[in-house]
Length: 218
Image (cartoon, rainbow, N blue to C red; front, side, top):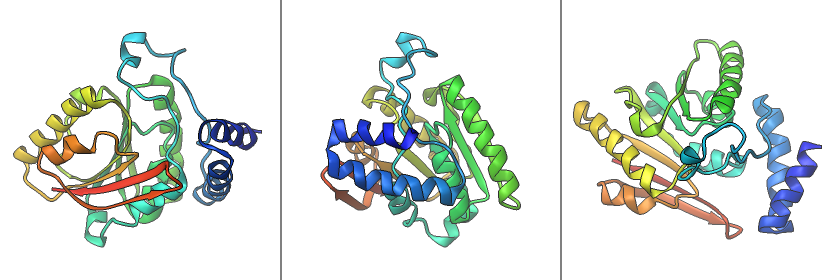
């Protein structure tokens, strides 16, 4: 039933071709990664209106885009910490674990989604030997980026107001501990802010008009 509901949701907003494409990947991805993260959540029932002003509703990144972005991770980067900003129910955390990351972190400001991500994290630590997944319920503007983070994943989690402040947190981390850093950015609506901060675009894609991704490096 969830697949059918999500199919109609996508079809209504982005067309029937997109709906068939996404649902095919959803069915395969949920089974392969062993998670249940499909669906949407407008967050209005469990977050104050003031916090929703700059946030995006919960909708997991589609598996096609997620995989395309993770394919750009280099072997040595698997030894760093992977951070998913706006981790939701933990879909990308599961993809990261499957790709070989063993130190994974996720943040989300929704207590409800945080609870779902905790359950996903526990399952991943059981499934993948040596995997440690740390989930925090936090405001990205106040989150201190761990020095070990080498890859950050974003699926358009908030608008440019919050993104600008989050980038400041990232830059403070890089000043404190200079290192290479890669940004995997799905639906990169605030990409220019990263470029203005000194990041360079390594690669990007666009498919079926609406699916977009960008890989940025520093």
